[in-house]
Structure formats: structure tokens, C-alpha cells
Length: 424
Ligand code: UDP
Image 1 (cartoon, rainbow, N blue to C red):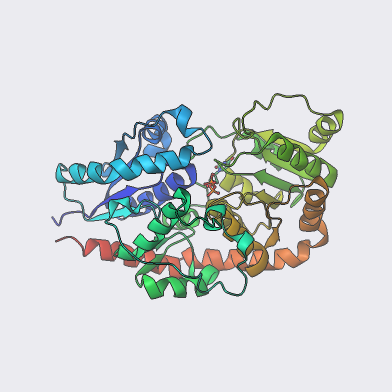
Image 2: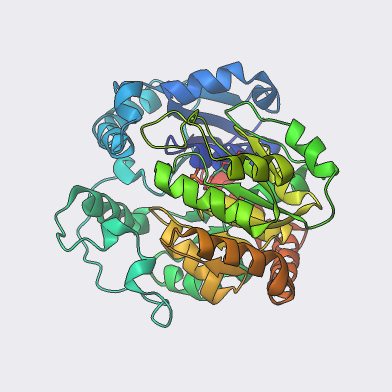
């Protein structure tokens, strides 16, 4: 019997990265690949407890923990993610070398997260301008670390180093689809010719499994009761609010959003993660106005099955921090967005939503209750027709891409073929 391809998948240890790369792992497992999923100790332990996620994989799937020595206390600080990155930078490459040498079955291919190129060698190039985005990208659409005037700042250097490493890879797997980002993809192909756009992976996985139901990889307990609440609401009447798995809000920001939501007089479902408010418990008292408005029209949850929520007929809009997974999940379900980006790629994503795809409103760093209330009313009511035309169109292109014969479907088949051909 021919040996099976063996792939190591190494996601950055943030929920959105692990989640989508676990779906990629499942897609490859479905094609009979051996997959080793390399994650930090905390994610490893969470996944081990999450037996229903693991039960989706066969005997060819292996979880491997990567010890990094950073305590949870340090990881939960403002710069925790960068401290963790720096630690991985030190340990990941030597760990992987040793690990690969000691493996029983030879490794055919390593698929590393786009910001974990420390597993490759260093390279010396200079980035001069953002090609393909000359017409719409402004300074405020760039994440703060790219706006740094000090080009030696550690966060800027991380992004530069990672970006410049990318062309070294044999191929680039992107969780996007051709019709969504054609011009940018053409630009990327000038430096990395072998691009596999296989997204949106969550929708793609559903196609390959021939199922309509979502397969959540959530590492946290999901509050399913919000779905029963949504079932009681009229179609497209609820705005869904979530700032993803990492971003935090100051208490002042939180109150502006809360008043904005209540004053908009729309129904809302809000993910209020226990660690959402920076440096503080959220048990503080709130005004009678907010309490009554929330009781009448709101539903709060610690964590929800987001893909299922966005697919629910009662959802008419999404107030989001513009994380890439959330953006794609919203696009696939045809839900218009209000974008309040925080960091990393979110500022660029929100600009695409507002200006390029015209699927919603990009409020950038504005945090004012009147503007928030007006934006919600515009999205859900006044300008709804304008947005829903665009979101319906994009949702149908997203579905076409992952269906048989679509660009993402063909690219995944090609990826699988190419990895197979790498077996010596
Ligand atoms: N998510 C979820 N339940 C929630 C909030 C978020 O399942 O209550 C998921 C969401 O579906 C997405 C991921 O968490 O897949 C967040 O990833 P994203 O890239 O949007 O943002 P990040 O968390 O990386 O900032």
C-alpha cells in the first residue's frame, strides 16, 4: 500500500487561528491524510477535553503539545500575545526539528500559520508599498503597528519579518475565495505564485461533509439557549454583537456600545465574554435605562455558536470587531456588518467591508453612542436594501466557490494532489 501523506499543521495559538486550521485538518483527514496538529499546551488540553471535536477525526489524526513556558497570568496581559509569539520564536524551530526527526512516519508537508514563519529560515527583503490597494487604503486602515514611525518597534518587526518570509513557502493556503479578493490575489501571486484559495473553510467543510449543520470547534462552552431566543424573533430583526475571542473593551467603550444598542431600539444578541472588559469584572451596576432596554430587547451570552447564530433567519446585522473568521462567516451568510476594528488585520478587513465590498459600515475607532445607534438603524432599516443587495450577491459567490466545480473546491483538490505528489 502507498504511504499516506503526513502533514503537520501548526496554528498560532489564538482561537480563530486554531479553529480554522482545525477545519483544514479535518478537510485533509477526509482525504485520508495523516495529520499532526501542533498546538500550545493550553489548547492541547482544551482539545483533549473536547471529545466531540476529536471524535470527528480518525486514527490518522494526532494532537501534539508544544510547551512554551509562558504563564497564563503573563498571557492574559496586554502584550501577552506578543510575549507568547516571542517565546514561540525561540522554541518552535528547534522543537519541530527534533520532533520531525523522531517521528515514526515521515512528514510530507508542514503547514504553518502565516505568522509562524519562525519554522523557516531568515530572509532579507524590503517592503516599500501596498500594491493593489492604492485606491482605497488609508493610514487609518492599517493596524497601529504598521503605522509606527519607529521601524525598529518590536511589533512592526514581527509583521515585517513574517510577511517577508512568506515567499519562501512552496505554496500559500489562504482562507478566502477568488471572487472576494481577486485583485489582491493577483498581486500576491506576483510574489507567491502557488496560491491555494480554499475558503471559506467553514463553508467548504460543510460541502465536503455534505451537511447543512455547522461543526463547531469552539474551545469554550457555547450557550445554545440563544438559538431558542432567536427562534422567537421576527426575520432579520436582531443585530448580533461580538468582538471575537481576544479584543477587550474599556468600561467607557462598553457603555457607549450599550447605550447605542439600547437607543437604537433594535433587538440585539450580545456576546459578553467574561474577560471582555479590560481590567475589570462586569458585575458593576448599570443604569435603569440600560437594564430595562436590555430586558426588553436584548439577550446576553458568554459565548455563542456563532456560525449557527449568523445563519439564523432572525439575524439582520452583525456588529463586529472585523476578525477575519467573523468577516467570512458573515459574508457566507449574507449578513451586513458594522465594523469596529481593534488590531492586526481588522482595520484592513473593515475597510474592505465598508469601501470595497460595500457590505456594511466601517465606523473604525469611533465609539460614540449616537453614532452607534444611528449606524445600527441605518444597517437594519434605512439603508438595509442597499447593503442586502451586495451581501446576497457575495453570499452566493461564496457558496459557489466551495461547491463542486467552484474555485475553492478545485483548489483544495489541487492542494491534496500536490501534497500527495510530495511523497518521495
Ligand atoms: N466565535 C464563536 N462564538 C462567539 C464569538 C466568536 O464561536 O461567541 C468564533 C467565531 O465564529 C470566529 C472566532 O470565534 O470563528 C473569532 O475569530 P475572528 O477571526 O473573527 O476573531 P479573533 O477572535 O481572532 O479576534
